[in-house]
Amino acid sequence: MTADLAEATAALRTQWDRLERWLGSLDDTLDDAVDQPSVLDGWTVGELVSHLGRAMDALVAAGPVAPGTNPLTLAEYLGTYPERAEQIAQVTRALDDEIAADRLTAVSGYARRAFARLDELSPTETVVQARRGPITLRDMVVSRVIELVVHADDLERSLPGVAEKAVDRGALDLVAAELLRIVVTRGGWSLEVVDPRLWVRLATGRTPYDVDDLARALAPLHTSDSVPDLGRMLPLL
Picture 1 (cartoon, helix red, strand yellow):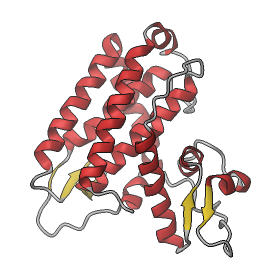
Picture 2 (picture 1 turned 45 degrees about the horizontal axis):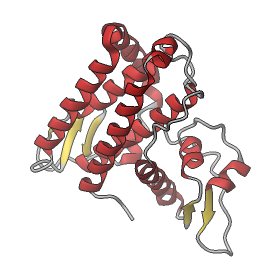
Picture 3 (picture 1 turned 180 degrees about the horizontal axis):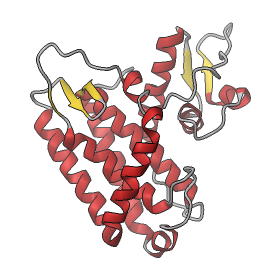
Picture 4 (picture 1 turned 30 degrees about the vertical axis):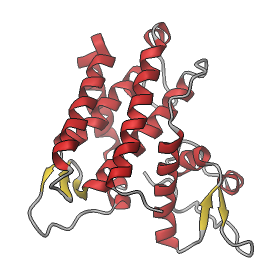
């Protein structure tokens, strides 16, 4: 079942609230780790935290479009990420330098402004102009949930000594379902998610593609079918 705008917005708020509490609870653990490499190649832990603010700021930057504008699909929007990876990294590093003195306060400020902007857009706008092109507001919000879930998982793995989890299970399930929907729309298969965290990691390139891992992450809906080889389709972003 596809989440509507209200459900996606609720998932975004829940995931952000959990992640914000998690970050705030780290205290010296985060202070000691900000300059250390994260699991995201080429990024420090501090840069990964700062990128959360950049991800939420995308909602602040969203604006109205001309009537009749054709939006990108969620798959098309996410597909623009790889070609802009270096630009995203450069902008994030500059932001991290700017807010390093009080990183968490700054990131929380970005999130507050993002939710305020979302409240402004929700009653009137169906399609919005985002940084990467026009997109439905619903898909824009889903893309923010994907950002928060994926990077919360990145942060968990970057700080393995922290027992508390940063990823909200409901938001994780939504992200797993949305990424699967992209795949089945392209291929026409009937699949379900068995291990949402493993599937999200495979779909976003966090875990190297492996057919055995894929078979643990997904399952066919019909016993006569099998999980297809998605090696040429993944990662999705």
